[in-house]
Image (cartoon, rainbow, N blue to C red; front, side, top):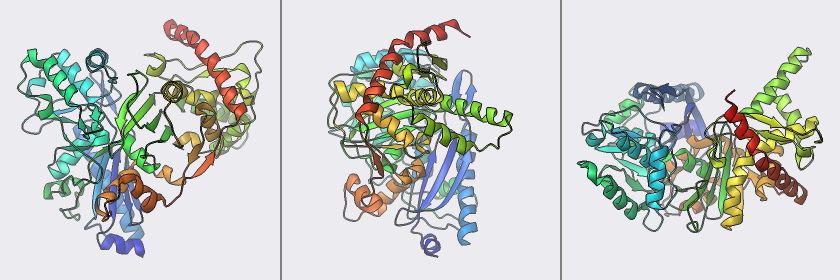
Length: 530
């Protein structure tokens, strides 16, 4: 009944996130507890060599997701959503969405997954003396210029997916600072785009004679908690085709999925971090200052309130692990054993926990796709052992688990060992941590750091953006975002922490030495072109 009154009184907060395979909506109460959810499954398409989601798919997905939320609310509470306290929109970061003066999308949305921007990213990294990844929006823009694409002179505005949805719901061309940091580097002292880089870019493209300057076509940058417009009448109809939702709802700055993951794990304060480990993996460590030099393994982005974050992004994580578990499932079916996938995962993870700290010399490469951190444009899943290695199930599964975070460790060694970055708490979330304890111990050994896991992290980015939307309207005292999360959302809950043992740390280091030495085997496998 409390949840029903919250919805009826218009005090519920809505968060919507566009993930790679699912659009999810979460409705939360004033205590940030989810009270209803909706979702829509979708998949990207390879069109003319580029990964995209069509404009029609984007809007149908949003509307279907919201309709699913409405259905959940009616089923649970027998009430319609008429008013909301606030709304937040989040989506996968980066990518490219350019618009003309009429507000029309001129080319299909180019997602973060596209890697056709190598020439542009390399040139901009050299020009800016700053690592500019392939997936960043500025790389996509410059690659379109280098390709002499016809739409470029007509660009009036370009943004990310979250920025696009927010614009069409509110009329405001704005972007949260965390998402904006995946378009162009942010100056942490001003909370805005780096003016020196904007100027360098304008000078670089001046010979083309475009009628625009970079600063004119980028979205305005806003920090968490800043007003970012209200739901217009047109926007309300775009979101809720049933017509029940009333306009006028305030929206928080739109954010990227990395930022909402930081919020959902309470990792926005300097010297905190989080690791997301699912199909792909990435770590986000909130640093106290710029790194001493650019590094291709490290992307510099920001938290939703503008603190610098060192990000290590790995293309591969649990897909190969899932493949091996599927093989054991087939074996059980062959033997006529009743199959329970969850039980298979648990038993195999428990077996891995009993393996030798160095996996008995066994090595696994989980490269379903290429892995930029280790320099691979393509990948081949590979298992490597010598005749003298200790080959048993425990070591086999431990090696497979180590491989899920091996590349992540290589990138984080740059931060923690070379750059001497200090971190007090790292929180893990994602599929790797579903079996209690095991994935935590593996990551703790890899990073030589205590790892926490919180139950709330499973709520995901839609919950994270809902919290940011609540921060906009439920923070009368003006608390900084880290304090708001500590006091109003997590209330001292830091999760369950596991510290690494010296034996596991030494074992992982020995395993990684073998892993690096045998990267030549992986390169040979790629070169062989199976």
